[in-house]
Image 1 (spheres, rainbow over the protein chains, first blue to last red):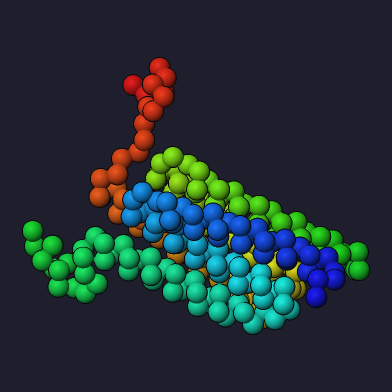
Image 2: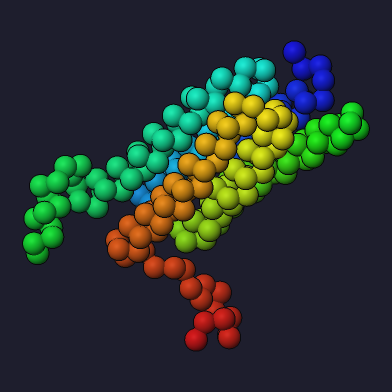
Length: 102
Length: 112
């Protein structure tokens, strides 16, 4: 499969993205505060989007880009949901209204 | 015409390679920096430079068709949501009371 120069370049980019994902996962494991972990999760999601795109180009099946777009959407929503949960301790609206009345 | 297409391919490879290097730099800074705020600064390299260069390289490589449109869609979405989520993380950390690391080495003139 790896026979031409584009394949080689995409394989190099894929390995770089893999190394970056491993480093970010180490920070996710080590991170002293919650916000380091949220930041690592967000960065990991961005790198996963790029990883899926490069993997689709490497396999010559760029239909994977739909999955990458879906992953980008889910990543943003999950980051905002985690931050909202750890700030208000609820996903819904009831506690937030009580917080606003204070 | 053929030379022009080859040149475009070479530009695409250079963009993809530089994007991979920037992603590694962002991840390494996110692992090695001592403070949350400097880690935030390092993680935004991935969100800006790596995403721009990798998507630009893949778009140049694929030519101009539906795939380029999907790449443009992913790029626009990451451009909107990346700074938004970074700001949300930074704001939540600031509200929770994490302060930047200052004057660690006690050098005169850095921090009054």
